[in-house]
Image (tube, rainbow, N blue to C red; front, side):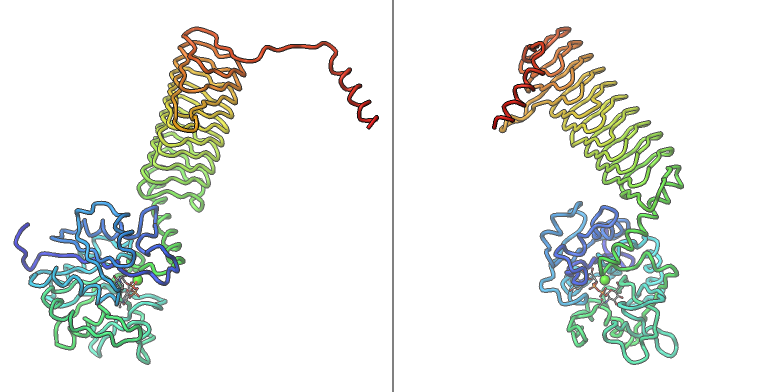
Length: 472
Ligand code: UD1
Ligand code: CA
């Protein structure tokens, strides 16, 4: 690491709070937005800035938060326990910037939409002005809940006052603190330990550092955002839902701009991580999660829920199908009402029809299971036809067993394939069979009770049954 100088940067992310206003047992930063925990947004923003070090302050249910995070080697974790306010949180990181000559950027784990260029702008004006503190601000029509920027008669920023501590007349102030700050590290190290908790909440407010700077004649600068949406904090579930709508619209607009046809954006849910190629059609109530990709020409019909799956080109997903952790190749069709469970690979032009469940199985090119079937732990070759009501009996109560169905096999309807079992290529299995032994290639496998027919039995039976009923 290069020797730190005045242009170097360290970042602190505050995320120790409980998120009381969420009224949830889950720590606020683990609530998801666009399918990802809130904290992951701030972490990836921090990673994009050219920082020497990143520190994440955790407290409330810190272990749970840590266990949900990735890239743990990219930042250090500092624990704040108990949580006595944003200033107290920053104080726990004192070691991390005392003696450091550069700038300390402070971000919050609950401000997920902030753009890197905004932060770079704040840092640039901070460095240019040689300020002790620089604050990202904005003017809100409804500033309720936010700390307000208090300016003197020369419009110089002198303090940040929290909503609950506002003095008479300050209620009219619409310029708010967005909770993103750049500090001169030396100023911070000197002033942090002197913060008091003499306020409405009895907490140590990091925002009091503005007064500390202005009171001693140091420079405070503000960097004002015209469009504050990106810097809005999440404090309640209602705010989270509102931001989800904003983010969802951004994701969908981007997709539509790139050539994806979305029939009803209001009911379409696509995680940011999902990749959709041009000329895909997403029908109403499509839900696409995680590491999913969809190839060009595919049509996703209403009510499909697809997670962590690769969908090739020209695939049709018919209504109300669920696909999880699977690969669907070009030209394949799934549904309606199909359930494709993890570990499934449907090869080119294969067809999985209504009320068919497939788990951890490969279905070869052009093979079909059109109705009411369970295929589990199975390997199907090419051109296989599975009749309605076929079940691979893969589980004996202790272990899972494999079914292999080779190329060109025809399985008649209502067949039970008791695994482990292998059906050789081009063989035929008679409908209604319970197959417990391998069927060789090109053979007929049939395993069902012999049918007997008793001529005229039915009318005789009915006559006798009716008489017996009369007699009783
Ligand atoms: C804070 C600011 C407020 C600003 C708003 C912008 C203070 C005192 N107020 O208020 O001026 O308008 O952000 O969104 O800073 N945290 C800890 N430890 C604690 C308390 C909080 O790590 O003891 C973390 C939280 O997890 C959160 C962040 O600090 O990520 C902000 O805390 P929060 O309680 O949401 O502050 P606000 O009331 O929103
Ligand atoms: Ca907040």
